[in-house]
Structure formats: C-alpha cells, structure tokens
Image (cartoon, rainbow, N blue to C red; front, side, top):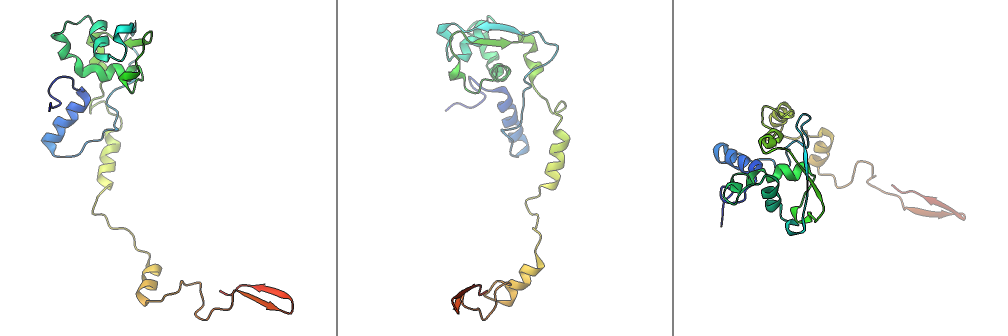
Length: 176
C-alpha cells in the first residue's frame, strides 16, 4: 500500500493531510484549493494525441517536455491542469481534446494558500459558531405539554364527538 508521499500524489490533498497529521483535525475535501484562472498568466494549448487518451500523466510529460525521472517532481501539479480544464475525471480525456496549460513556472500561481483564501475569515467565524456541544432551544409550551402526561394533542377534546353525524338527511362533519 503506498502513501500519499509516494508516487502519484495530489499536492493539494497531500498538504491537507500533512496539516491533519500536525493539528489532529479534520479537513474539508470540498474546499477549493486551486483557482480556475489567473488573469495575467499566458495560457498555451495542447491537442491530445491518440496515445495519450485517458493519460494525464503522459499529457503532463509531453506538455512540459519532462523526462521520466523529473516528471515525478510534477505529478503533484496534475490537479492544477485538471482544474484549469474543468476535468473531473482524467479517464474522460479523449484524442483531439484541447488541454490548456500555463508555463511550468506558473503552475504554483494557481494554488490558493491560506493567506489568499478569501473565505478564511468566514471559516474562522463558522468554526466559532459551530460548537458540537451546543444545546438546542427548548419550546416551553411543548415541554410543559409533555410533562403533564396528556395523551391528546392540545387541539383535541377529551370527549370527542362522532366524526360524521346524519341528522334529518343532513350530514354534519366534525367531531374534534
């Protein structure tokens, strides 16, 4: 069994797991860690050939002209390429698809750090108000009703009438 530190790891997830080990806290898999675009960075395009279908690792190698040894240093950036191209499953990459990519130097610019995170303040506020030991508000009327031991809801009479009564060829409906 390999760990996230071995082989093909996703950098943003790996960073959160490292924090988890240090802080002993949970992390949010839905929190965005990558920007879809950065305005001033030049974006290039790459057309996927048939032999690289469904192989984001080979696409990464071809785009940045990496050898088989140095590519291991960039496997953690695959999530950036997937995010830029709105690809949720690398197995959906087909021949002829255009993959947009920044220069290898600019890949890190797409990462959202805690200093950049606009929702960091909101997350602090959410953590402050989301206390697991918080007591819920008790409805006093309902509580008093339950304490008296009454079996009927407050709108029902203790001596109900028949629900339907026929009187001189007239139907009376009611009875609560």
